[in-house]
Image (tube, rainbow, N blue to C red; front, side):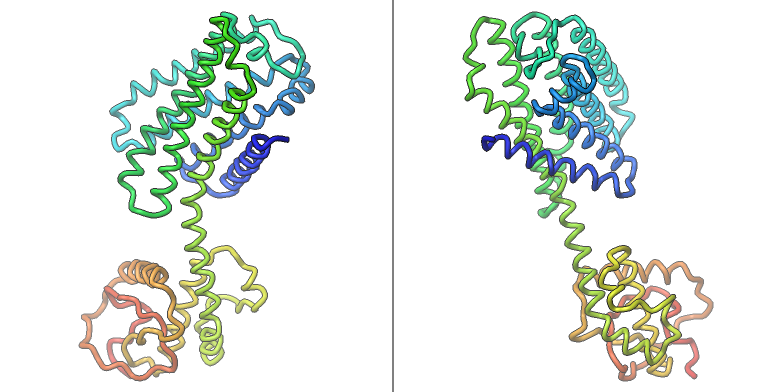
Length: 375
């Protein structure tokens, strides 16, 4: 295999990995549209491999049936991009008519592609009719319709990702949006390359059939999909980094939590997880970290006699600022929802606690605050 084949297989593996991951996660309406587009692009690129195309034709006993399958999947992905633009638009009703006409155009193109496929003479060979009969009127019209369907999706991608990349703050999201924009631009170059291939053959020139231009076409296609896959995956790495910081904070707090909850076992919500069980429990890390710090706060408050103010900030057991912000927002939401039954009392000096934990801002009395009247 040449280097282009290795690049294509790498992109194919990344696309299937990303698509499977999207289908294992609960998604919003926008997320469901994104994973449908990812699935259609992945199927189209998979069937685009010459070996898989030939196997598909042999399995279905229809000559070149893989060609409309991959092209219709591309048109479906373009329709999905139109839908995503509508979901992301600040005023969805503004361009509703334009999106409706675009859906109608893509549907008409799909029907025309099927008709042209049935009219074109085909053979059960490793090369499909688009290459065997390049330059003929039927194949030229079929190829132009295919590239037009791809152009609709790429135009939606540029209209969606480029402005978002300018507005996004520096970080993983901006990088991902810029990679997606670059993928759309490379896709337009691939589209122009395919149209030039058909037009030059229609004019009787065969220089676009040389191995150099064939490799160029494959490199453009693989690069476009690689940029799309990387652009979609980079923002996900930001979530992975947050998850990892929460997981490490949960493990660092375990010694303090174990010591305090052994002294005050009543503050533990549910069963006490074992050490091995906790190391391999990768779900709901954010919630478990929040509960752990609440249990530490409750245990410290009870050990201090229950008559002091909120505990002081932690020292060496402090977690990172991101976790503190998470805990502050979660605790404020919980305490703000509780009714205030008594006026706030004057601040009292806090006694020395057994250990110190994260101090979260409290906007109204909650279940972790000292009582109104000291015992």
